[in-house]
Length: 112
Image (cartoon, rainbow, N blue to C red; front, side, top):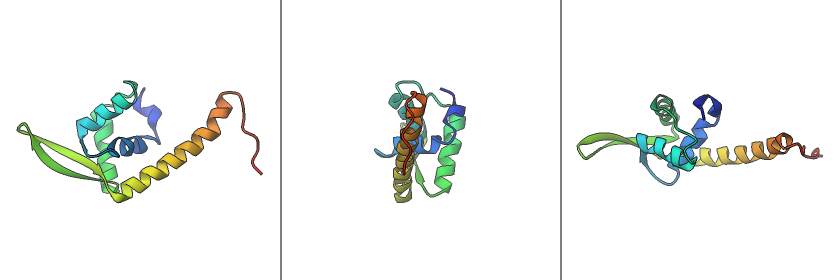
């Protein structure tokens, strides 16, 4: 799946893979790939700028560590990031509940 298809959803996906705990940048990419059964294989040029944007927005914090002599930046959700993730999840459920029946050929009944 191409990164372009994820427009509007990338931030929520990144927050979701960070929800279980801190991950270094490459670990975020691998977690997305694993959680999608290999369907999402995003390039670093897509993921790292998005992580930086989330950090600047206060949704993610980061710290540097050294592992096996290599420097790694580890990212984790902030309290605001956890709240944003819950909002993303609610929004996604509402979106999917609205769109899925239409695409499946069974439009939802009108709401009063």
